[in-house]
Amino acid sequence: MNKKTVAIFMSVLMLLSLVLAGCSSSSASEESSADGKKVIKFMHLWPEGSSNAQFTIVKDVITEYEKEHKDIKIETEILNPDQYREKLKVLASSNELPDIGMTWSDGFIQPYVEGDMLAPLDDVVENNPDLKDAFIPGVKESYAVDGKTYGLPLELNISYVFYNKEIFEKYGLEAPKTFSEYKKVVKTLADNGVVPATVGAKDGWPASFWFMYLADRIGGSTILTDVIKGKAKMDDPAIVKAAEEIQNLVDMGGFVKGASALSNDDAKGYFMNEQAAMFLTATWELPNYTTSPDVTQEFKDKIGYFKFPTYEGGKGTEINSYVGGPGVGLFVAKDSKVQKEAKDFVGYLVKRWGEKSVVDAGVIPATKVDTASLDLAPMYIEILKDLGEASNVTTYFDTQSSPAVSELHHDLVTALFGKQVTPKDFVKQHADELAAEKK
Image: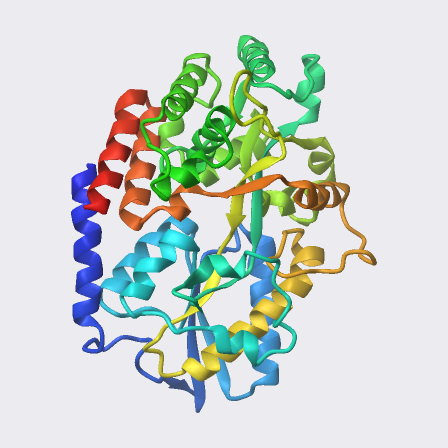
């Protein structure tokens, strides 16, 4: 799908959603019942197979809530993240959003708010003493539009290169601190027939981590945010250089073969099965390296992580600058006929998630947690320390972007990794779409 098609599609989608608002026989706008109970429809993106820790927490919280609220039945529909994104667009276009769903922040949530599809959730926080001062500063604000909050965050994520220490030791390698050192690691592994890094580029966003970090390290920690805000140009030489370095790594055999055809789950399998030495991903994967009962302790003991290396001569000299930001948050559909009940459950889930996610899942919640008395995995403790020392956390480029730019970005990243687009054209197509939106 080319950039113009994407832009037109998204424009038509949002217009259609507005036209159909109020005149659809949506599931969210009809109060349904089962055995005399009010039914809340909840769609989320943590399948049991790929996100077992998160899936289990949500399932357990729902069970707890239903026991405490005998008149409520919560029905779930669960999709993987890429399927979820696509279905959410379809449901929005016909005003059939679930009573409760998951959303990303910033540019992702804005069209849904502008389409008058989401209910403000400030009252959930104001009416719940446990939530008033619970959120890590700046995280909840990422879900605000014009001063009102339309999503309550569950997660906070930053990204690292996770690596197999046993493979590194076998070839006498150490965690690199500079990009030159990183390329030497890649060469050694590739020369010995080992896949240096796995990445799923089919859907764009997992592979974008490489682009975002290289842009940060070469052009400075604020460069991509500045592009979104119009303070910098997408065709800045530093951004072109970031795209060039990705293709340099491709040419070196730095990534798993056929990356452009692999989903994130496909790519993750290479790392989990010890067929790749490294995996650049976010801290939502921490359960697999710390707490998950489905992963052997033998494997967990082999996994370490390092911060994305600095780039010699680059403006981003601070290794404690991260790509990350808020993970998913919860929304309530404005047209839900069980809006009051949906909001009550959202407040309950956010509170319980903060309490359970650290110990039960080993993920970083968007709410403050006192970890002093908790028995936590060493890697988790190290990452919490990193967060406290972070000089910057740049929210993912595709999250900050409008839906049209985000969709185009995903397509272009896939093409960049597959060498179906040159670095200059990669940057130019982004620049053209960003310029078109400002007209």
